[in-house]
View 1 (tube, rainbow, N blue to C red):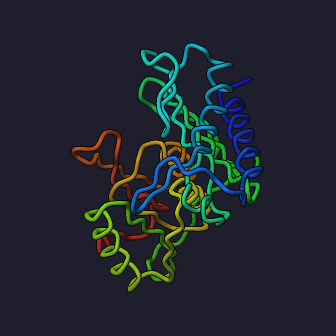
View 2 (view 1 turned 90 degrees about the horizontal axis):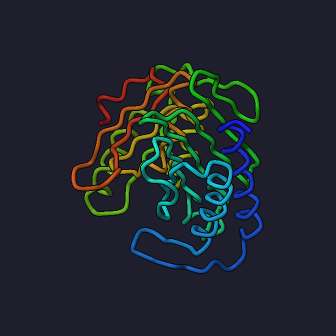
View 3 (view 1 turned 30 degrees about the horizontal axis):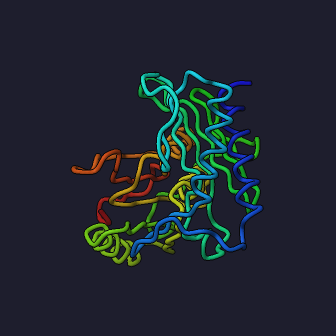
Length: 249
């Protein structure tokens, strides 16, 4: 089984688990003002870890719910077991599983699986970006007036303030604005030409690793800037590479 096949298998199996529990009472492990962590987040990551490291026991795994495997390995799986946990908890069927493989610092495999819609995005370095086995590409739209943008607002006061200001500026320029609750799916939608850009002032690596390779392979552009004081947190501007975003940022 190739790395891409393995990642796809793990994402689909985790998706089955999430779909099975969707709509039922979920145990909350941790709740903050703007976020929720569920016991199912850990259960999903444990399932993914068992599949990936069971097949690649020498690899490292870095996920939202912790690390596993050989942390000295140059092969590192980057996992978000439920991207869109708050949506899941509130019964909103917009969330996904995101798995990427980074080798020697470079993302080479990405899988994003939406278990509710039943869509799976896959990409491997040097190959095409795919949705359910068919090649995809970013949109050809090149003006803000035609564009639909996804602006995230983060989880603390500074990120919320930045996000809301950007949302306001963008809403005066773009055709439509969205706040969707899943960064990974937002990037998958850009790769598919459904959205034109995703902007957020602070997001974690596991949310965007698979999506970065997917968007760039599909013809788009992803700019990441490290956020000082936060480990593996990034400011992100992902787009089809054609629309001008300077006046929004």
